[in-house]
Image (cartoon, rainbow, N blue to C red; front, top):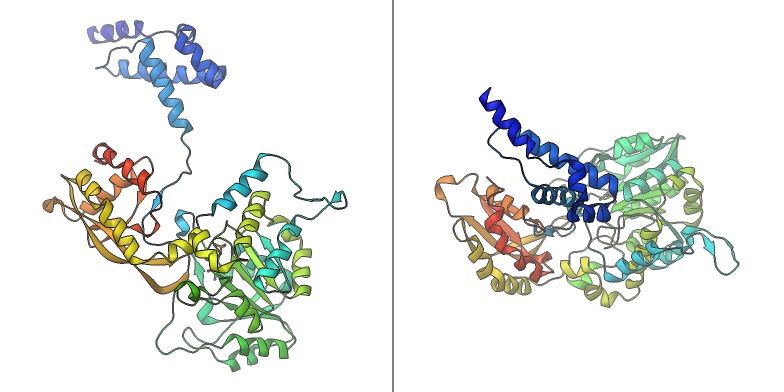
Length: 476
Ligand SMILES: *Cc1c(COP(=O)(O)O)cnc(C)c1O
């Protein structure tokens, strides 16, 4: 009983909602966020305080404390869920971390059309309704070296649309070695089904021959399809049919040859010292009739699915009602256009397109950066980890060239608490994730590795290091 009385006395000290709202700070809260949200938050702050008093051990907060708490609640609720991180995983085009960083030109182009009206579907020459596809289709065809091209929401959508438009109710022949799954449940057999096509698998996992395709052709066959093995490699005793030969088999039977190229390079990456990845131009030259590829992988643009190929097939694809459902928005169009412009001057690409710039960074340059910031990182990790510079390998990512790696350099952050080995690197990883701009690395043999290939804003990275001390508290 006595205890209850104490608590009720405590509650009596709790300011009322009206009184709080009438204080200068309460008036400012209403002015800043509107009456309904301000009052709702103040009520929540009072309720929280009441619960704490009733639970015992706490005295009622005063008006200033309650208002501070309300501000805190609003700030927390206003923190965006989607926010920037440092991608120091060593995987440059990391699907979980948003893939390609955009060039400034593309970001500005997006902002320009986002801000107001644009000629998205308006023909400025004739003053009448236009087609949003006109902004990109010709430019993309020109740069890809294709008769025609078009764009949809992502490459998964491109594959779905192409199959539905060209092959619905028909059979599509694919090698068993290419029935891929890309992260996020994109599986060729499932897409095929949803597109209304019947998948005809030929060959075996490791070996498929030309005769496998020839023998599988029936009057119901609608296309031969090749899927670029983008996130794995089959090695050892293998055989695959070359694109030229697949195209010849398809064309002899009057069928289209469709290629899902995945990463899809628009230019030969060897000119930047990178490994060869089949280009759109090469694949068209090998006889592909329709190619699909991503906008945010090697192309270095925003999320999009690009389709390039024969004029009449692209026209048929564009007439399909699904095209409308899978269309891209004006911001994407603006960004792709800006990125494609950069491709008109391929020699400048490594300087202008961040994805190519990061992929072509020299190990020596990354190592120099690592040595420069190592002392600062070591100073702020003192007490829980030791830091050194180590050579490592970055990956291109996003299913491009899965077995190729790029020589790079990393900060190797090793837990100093030997007794706690086993979970030490995990705890360090969490400290870095808890920073205001979370830093994402990878763990190798209980060492937290930060591959600096993709560290562009070094100043911002170093500036938040002092918070590593306090980010420890949120770790435990
Ligand atoms: C990445 C990839 C896809 C999916 O592309 P999204 O743009 O992520 O939808 C499909 N096929 C292949 C071969 C890929 O590499």
